[in-house]
Length: 128
Image 1 (cartoon, one colour):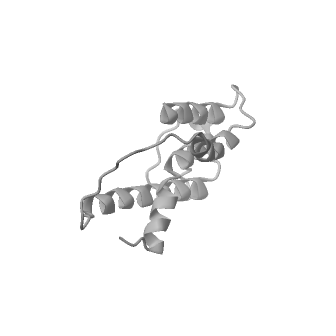
Image 2 (cartoon, helix red, strand yellow):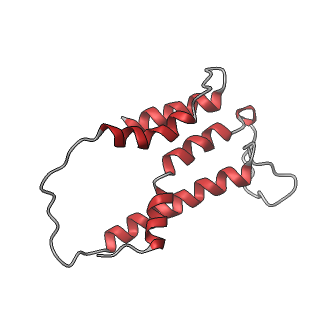
Image 3 (cartoon, one colour):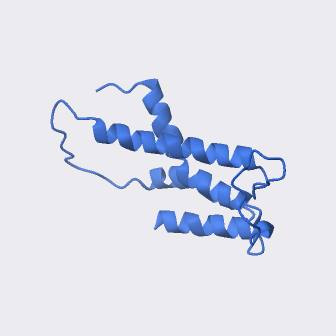
């Protein structure tokens, strides 16, 4: 089975879905809680409750689409021969390499900063 570059891209970008969700939560403008939801976001009177709405939601949606496409492709893929996993081992360095980008996003965590605190809670929920 050969991996193609675009499939590798889907898997790579989709794997950052949790981080994009954390960054989306940190980018949310929590002072706008209680304002009515504006569904006609293309109108100039409508404001999206994010500090950088197009960038934050764009990155999140890109990661979400890549993640969903990866799941769909994996469900549709059938190997030519049966695959058996004979052994697996825990490699602590891999966990550190995976979790380092998440930890960096909380380097200046402050419990008064609601966005960082909610992002931190998302990280903890995802890890456990």
